Every structure is written in structure tokens, then in C-alpha cells.
Image (cartoon, rainbow, N blue to C red):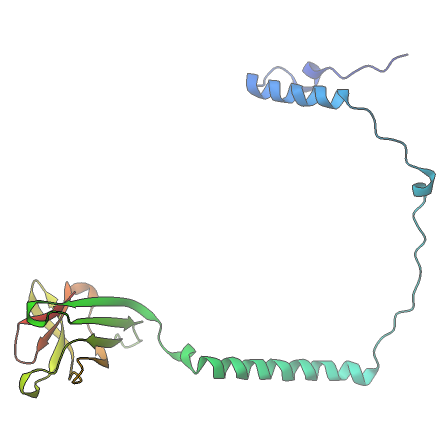
Length: 197
């Protein structure tokens, strides 16, 4: 008696889309055209014998020393990370960096304001770096302002420039920054914009 081949249409039915039916039919015919795998050899019929070994455990004093050694290694690693970062992990993260460029009153001057994450009191700490902005006439101060509609609205701080035109100072803006439309640097007592965003 010959073995009956499985009928494809009996197995999958007739509710398939044409493309899916053709794909399954090709797979069905490929499976029917293959030969069965060879018989398992006698050598592989039995699994190989497993050699039994005696497990050697460390002595009790060695087991007690492991947690202490691990704790010491973790302490040294934590100390090294702390020294390597130099306490920077406690510094606020940078929120945004704002570039400023010189106007006709300060051609070639530039600045950047690195605004850090707001603190719990609502202050925006920042670092202002200025380049190519020589000292103001008569030793006057420069001022960093927030503006709204072209008007100076909120003073963020004052600074002096080095003779080479550079300086880096820390300032603070306890204001709602989203209410401002620009940052500017002016000479104290003047509304002429020297640098702007």
C-alpha cells in the first residue's frame, strides 16, 4: 500500500489570497520533494558517557575574604571616579549655549552664553565668554541684558573686559527666559547694542 501524499487544498482551504496561496503552495511542494533525513548511526544512538569530577570548593577563610575584597575594590573604584570627575557631577548641566555677534559698534567681537539648568529657586546660572571686545571707554562696565520688543528689560549682570578683549564671567538670570526675545551686551548707561543674538 502506498503512502498518501497530503493534499494542499485540504490543508489550507480556499480562503487565502492568490499571492499567499502561491507562496504556501511552493513551500508545500518543496517539502514534498525532499528526502527523509538519514538514519541515526549506532555510534550516536547512545549519548557519550560523562566523566564525573569532584568539585573542589575554596576553603572557608577564602570564602570569607571574597566579599571583603569585592567591597575594597568597589571603594577604590568609586574613589577613582570621584577624583577623575573632579566633583563635576554636582555641577548643573548645560541647558543651552547662546552665541552673540558684534554689531557695527563692536565689529569682530563675539560672545557665548552657556546657560545651565535652572536651580530650585528659579535662577538660571550662566557663564558668559567674550572675545575681541576691548575695555570700555573711561573704564565703564559692560552689561548683559535680556530684551523684549527691542527694549532692554532684565539686567543679568555687569563685567569688565581684559586688555586683550577677552573675559569669562559667571552670572545669573532669575527671570523667565522664554519671555525675552534676545540677549544683548551694552556699555553701562547706554542703550547702543554692541553684541546681540
